[in-house]
Image (tube, rainbow, N blue to C red; front, side, top):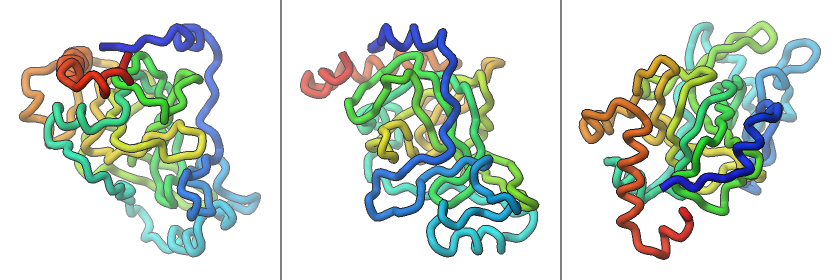
Length: 241
């Protein structure tokens, strides 16, 4: 069942903020920013700004072979996710939204993107996420950009999606926000995101292909998720009202 927030509808009419230049990790042991936008990553001479990365990262990135692409930033989430039902039960929050911006940069010192996602509906809610601005940021390992004179790129491990503005996305957040502002969803990207292109093509994680065979839209999947949520104990369901 959707939890619709009236404030979100008002914010749709307002100009939205772009993805910030930097975002700080909620991990107190990480001194460098968790996210650094490509536009902000270099100094006047085109060199990566060492203060924005963990020690040794600029040197490691500069040593990458030309044309090489980086993969997904690994994330340890020890919760069941083999089926849609398991994903639904394991998720802290579930967001149904629309991609408004794909910002290229460095996430956890590796090339990637942050998707600026307008929240169309909160399918499963949690106070851990700050949704007051009507958007969340979602890490996704698909990017191609240039900083200074060096090219960077990233590709997902298995997901076919290459999101652009206007695509829809169903986000399963299995963990608390990754940043201090409570805005970043850090998923296992090839397993916890479902996309639908502006042209209507549904792009599922590989491991859910069989489980969701027959579904053609995100709306249909959301109805299935709502049915799964209706079976949860009242103590859990209370977060979704």
